[in-house]
Image: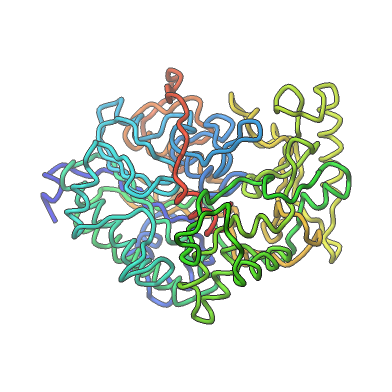
Length: 542
């Protein structure tokens, strides 16, 4: 309605659908479930939006909102590594300028809600409530705004679906979480009257990880997104709307390849089984069954002994919870078994003693334990290139049990990344074949097996642009997530950072390039929040 943003136009609304893609959207369009989204796709110009390598949330969204590849912004995964130490990534790991900060430098204000890897928020002209990898009740910008948002949203706002009347993983929990995103964004637009808005929905991805293949839950998530989008467009009246996703989503019907097991057979990986070889996702015993007991003096219960046995065949707490959910036992048991119990019963990579290994499956690569770079490096600098070439050759030759190539590509990191932070990437990048195969970092299982994640990320997402700024006759062939930030700059006639890796996706008048000063991202601050780690582990990312 006119005047809903103090008579100041919202010139561009960017809507982020995590994992949004045509194979998911088309059946919902055809059934009439998503009239608002379908209208945007039908009226405007729409097409595929190619993600990066790796096409995973924590790295892809920073690429999208900075317009730069991970070699320039420095985030490759949900985890960042320093030697054998690790940390969950946050905004201080992103060493490139977010587009809303660039707009702010040119006198334009923004409201940003739920975009991943944006905590802690930096100062800019506008408001920001962070998304995935932020702790619950995160620091927002401006200071104190979250309390006002909660009041505007009926007394509650959360980053992750909560227990209670609408519990985590329930359809009601998903719907309420999505509703809160819309309410928070609309409140901030009324209050701030921004030029630019960025509203992201995470449940369009997490529903596939938490309830894979559950048609009813997927439809409910997208219906609520469509409702919130309809109300947001009605209340904020944006001149232009840009719908984007960070990657796609689909079934994984091929094999899972346990790369560390393969590397152990070839002498690269050394194992240990004392629970010390993997990150410690849960730092305390969060288990009703153990309440009041000291962790180090605890005698394992029959349940824990059963879980320990399950670990030996590759079950995770996520899989245990899913199985128990089907028989109605997840709430009293499945979510309260700490990951430590499972890790202690299984083999892990002994990183200091190994030559090369997969540190995190989500970064899609192998790291070399290089002397002088890692604290206990086993490969000398003189051997580095020959070891890397050997790994590329060996992994390129891997065939699945049905004789198909495991990978579309196995390449040195420089093939995919360029910039000042390339040295933080895995040394060898492995790209699963069509993302219909998957890799895993586990030890103690057969080299090949059924994928633990039956649905997972695909490289092709979507983009739809509707409004007078966009050329409806334009071709979106070849559009990538690196093009989104230059598109935003061009629409506002803000000079595009010459270091961006993309170009505007449609022929928008204006915006030459210019070089900007080096981004001052301040020092990296640890994400010291066990709940964030547990959440990422539950989603299957860790």
